[in-house]
Image 1: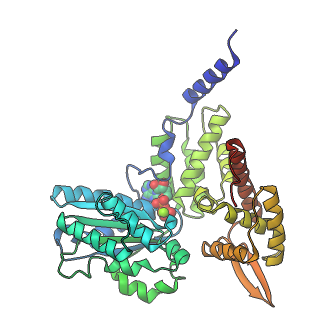
Image 2: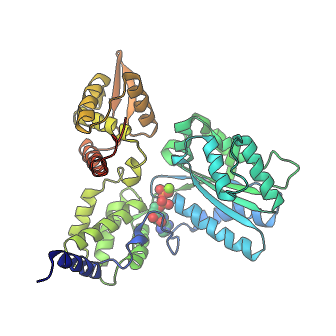
Image 3: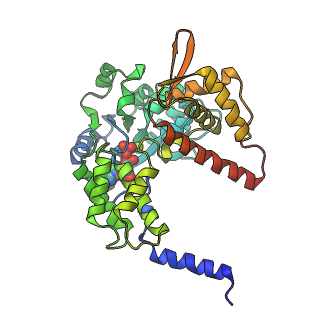
Length: 415
Ligand SMILES: Nc1ncnc2c1ncn2[C@@H]1O[C@H](COP(=O)(O)OP(=O)(O)O)[C@@H](O)[C@H]1O
Ligand SMILES: [Mg+2]
């Protein structure tokens, strides 16, 4: 008789064989699509700004600000443009380096510069004990000594500025210009989210127009028909032939068309495919799309909660549990009570009152909660995400963390 486990393994292998996917990784967020669709105007504007790095050697430090909502292709536009600028540079025998940095996960200006140094040359530039300006100067020297040019993309700068209070845009726009004796070698693409950008005191509309002038590139949300093309391209790369019908693609494009968000569209496609596999279906059906849609709320996707610390997640959960569906705000006192219960549930050490207020202040910078005082009361609100969905998502993630911790039998996950 066959061992049960052998049957399990064989079943798992045949399931892979029967999967609707040919290469699921083509649906990953950071996968670079073969072609960038419907962004010709924007690519042309980047070309007009950054050709100066290649044909006006040493005389210009071009910069641009790209902004738009979630999933409108800001990151992929900058990466796609960078890759192609490198190709042109090679054909013209200009040594161009392209560096992409996401500032969301970077703690300070210092670590931002360190990250840049690591990418340009980890051995020579990332020197311990150097301050940011010394290291920036080191980078400029290095480019100069080796006759290199640099196109740098700084993504999610609005997050960085809100979080750290440090306006690095100014530093980086002047980068390479201060050293007047040197040829100019650095171009920078800054990326920010649209609704956040003009809320920054450091970046009011007049500063933006002074700093970036004509190189302010706003990406509009995608129309459903544009999303359809983007989805079709991904579908052909990721799925086996005839597993996804045009009807399914149209259905997803219509759903995501409400936000104009390509990331949401691609994520629904990926989840729908996974549902099809789970049900051993040979085709992705509209019902799989409906299930996928239920699973993902556009504003609460992986990248939204993932960067939060465990304390931040627990505190957010406390707010979500405490706030009533028909009330916009919850009193801080009630957040504290709910927080204490959550800590017991997830076996976490509680933090004190002042720290709790500090974490809420941090969360408010990400837009996940808003804070106000009214009639002497400190109030906390949840502006963005339906409470039910937020609660479910947070409970799922925290349960996963707890299970991981139990399996590893390590020290408490948080103290
Ligand atoms: N014009 C496009 N053509 C092909 N794929 C796109 C396009 N715009 C966005 N995408 C894809 O959609 C997803 C979200 O794009 P992304 O650049 O991460 O958006 P943003 O940075 O604006 O949030 C990525 O998987 C990206 O490859
Ligand atoms: Mg992005």
